[in-house]
Each structure stands twice: as structure tokens, then as C-alpha cells.
Amino acid sequence: MYFAKCPECGKRIAAVAETCPGCGLSLKEYYEEFDIKGDELIRYNGDRQRVVVPDSVKRLGSHAFSHCKALSVILPEGVTTIGMRAFIASLDLKSVYIPDSVTDIGKDAFFNCVKLEDIVIPGRLTVIDDCVFGGCDRLDITIPKSIKRIGVCAFSQCGFRKITIPNGVTVIDESAFSSCCHLKSVHIPASVTHIGTGAFSRWNRLKKITVSKDNPVYHSAGNCLIETASGTLVLGAEKSVMPNDGSIKIIGEEAFFERKGLKYITIPNSVTEIANNAFSYCGALSELTIPKSVAAIGERAFNNCSALKRINVEKGNPAYHSSGDCLIETDTKKLIRGSKNSVIPGDGSVTSINECAFDECADLGDVIIPEYVTDIGDYAFCFCKGLKNVTFAGSVNKIGKDAFRYCEDMTSITFADGVSELEDGAFAHCSALTDIYYNRTTEQWTLVKKDDGWDFRVGEYTVHCADGDIKKG
Image (cartoon, rainbow, N blue to C red; front, side, top):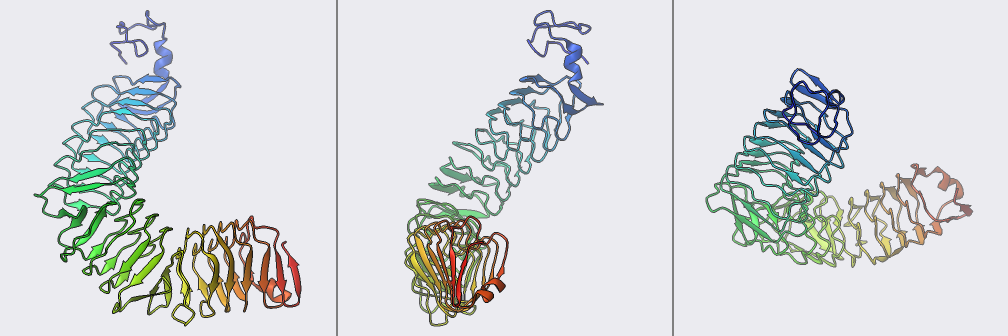
């Protein structure tokens, strides 16, 4: 091995020197910290804060610096490859010098380097692979013009204040820029022909969306990013106004995910589908109107919309209807989404309550589950602060996983006609619970199927049965 300069202090030294005359560094000991085979650095085993990689290294192997304690790493000119997970979870790492000779950076190479601030992507790189900079929440970076593809979660949870996607990028994969919560605007250049699901999701400060007029696949209108041919609204912002010109047919997955400032939205009557998580975590959304054109609503489309007060479905919709401020899938009789003002209809139009249907609905007060409802989905009422008493008017087949988890104000549960199964976490963390009223015998209560943890960290309740009481435990 040969160093023209001391790796510690930078002083010029002779090739045969054993010790640096400037700082006293033992070069033999320094070299021994590097496990090198051929031209590949297999592992750095030292604990120095500043590491200068020897000139003989051309490739960094998988995990070469993973979980290392260095603050800065300098790679030599001539390195061509940085392997998968090479620096993963190096929690103290602040800067890495990458020479222009690098043409390949493997997946997860800098994943979760939470203090990484100073790095320049080399200009010969054409792909930023999956999760390369994911979780680098202090990173602010320039994407070079050489890049053609930005991989899955490549920049997820990065701390960008501003980002420019260069003209030349053709593919932006799913979740590529998800949870970049400081970004307020995005511009899609003419070269982009594919944008994956959730590529820009969870930008809770997003204000402005624009697309180059020369882009053949996407366009913007009303502050919305739209895939032209399919009519899919890919991305919306807090101030988006969906065009009512027939150009939107589908509201895509996570299109408005976590738009915390979105209070009202008008869905045009050209829309036929609202995809999974389309409006999830829109915590300020207070009113929802589903036009009669909508024939499909995906899973968790309105999950955690905790401020919802009014839900209305236009008359004539063949798939859905509303009643008592509840969104109901007509054929299956499934309550898809409720609001803080919901009254679950007791006319038999609802027989099951969907997963997450009421999650985080505050101030529900007392809830009556009508006799026709037999199944309560997972997480259906979780985190419903202000929910005090729940009554099941009929015989319940199953109360799903975490269905009432963290309903911390709940004091009583009434089973008017029995229950067959309580899944894991069904009433977990209902810390104020004191009374369960079960209108059958103590023996029948003991026969109810109860998963471990159904009453995890619940108060010291008493089960009041028709023929006597049972204390918790």
C-alpha cells in the first residue's frame, strides 16, 4: 500500500515510512484496521472519527462501514463501486467524500445515516438505487443530471428543504421521496415517464405541483399531478382543486396522504375509483361527499380522518350510500367510514364495521352497535378519545384485533346478546374500564374465545353476568 500523504494529518510522507513524522501515526497499525482482499475493502475495523481509505481500494464491499463510529470517510480516486449497505446505520457519520470514478452505489448504502449532511453524488452515476439515502433526515443534496432512475425509497425521510429533479430522469419509483416532510413543492420534468405509488406521499407541507408542458405522460391542473392517459390523480396538495373537465377518473393510492391542512375537497363526478389510502391521515378533513359516479373505494381510503363530521353519498350511486353520517357499501352492508357525528343505522343496512372505520374519531361519547351488526373489524374504533360507553345490541360474532385499543375514556361495555370471540388487543389499554355487562351466564362468559392480550392493560373491571359477577383475572 502507498500513501502520498499521512491519512491522519495530511503531511507528505515517504512510501517506506513506518511512522508519520508530523503526527506520529503508526502506518502499520493504521493499515491493519482495513480488511482488504484484492482491490475490495471487506470491512473497516477501526474506531477513528476520520477515515481515509487506502488508494489500493477500488470497491467497497457490503457492510464495509456499517454501524461504524466514524464522523467522516474519504474514498480514494479510482473507487468504482460502493456495495449494498456499505454505510448502513452509521449513526454518527456526517460526511463522505465520493470521487467521480464511482459508477455504482448499492441498495441501502447510506440507509439510516441520520446525521449525514455532506455528500456529493458523482456525475457518472445513472441510478440512485433502492433506499440508498433512506432515513438520512439531515441530508440536503443535488441530484446530478446523469441520473435516469430514482429507486424505491431512495430518498425516503430525507431532510431536503428543496429538491430539483433533473430533466433526464425517466423513472421515479414507489415511495422514492416519501416522508420528505420539509418539501413544499415538486416539479416533474419532461423526461419522467413513470411515477410509482406514493413516490411523493406524506409531504404534509406540499403546496405546489407543476409538470413540464412537454411531458408526454403527465400533466398538472388545479395543483394536481395527473397521469393523462389513465386519468389517475397521482398527487394532490392542500390547496388542490380537482378539475371538473372529465380528466380525472381515479384518485390514486396515497394521492392526498397526510395532507394535514386539507379541510374540504370536491370530488368531481367523473371519478369512478378512490384507491387505497387516497385520503389517509387528512386530519383536518371535516366534510366528505362521494359522487354517484364512484364505483370502488379502496382499503383505508379515509383512514385517520379524525375531524370528519359529515359524510354524504349522492343519490343514484349503485355501490355506496350514506346514512347517519356513515359511508356504507350497499351490497356487502359494510360500514366503510364513520365520523364523530355518526349514528350507525339499525335498519339492517349495516352488518359489519370495516377495519379502521372510526379510528381516532374523538368525542364519540356513547356508541350503540345495532343488533344486525355481527362483526367489528380490526382497529375499527382504536384511539377514539371521548368514547365512554359502547353497547352491542345484538349477538356479536367477532370483535377484531385492536378494535377498541386505547379508548382510554371507556368505562363500560354492554353485550346485550353475547359475543363469540375477542381478538388480541380488542379492548387493550382501555384503562378506565370498570364494568362489562354480559346478559348471559358466568359459564357462557368463560366459554367466549378470548385471545391473549384482549384486555391488556385494562382497568380493574367487573363482568356482570345474568347469574353473578366475575372480577378481572
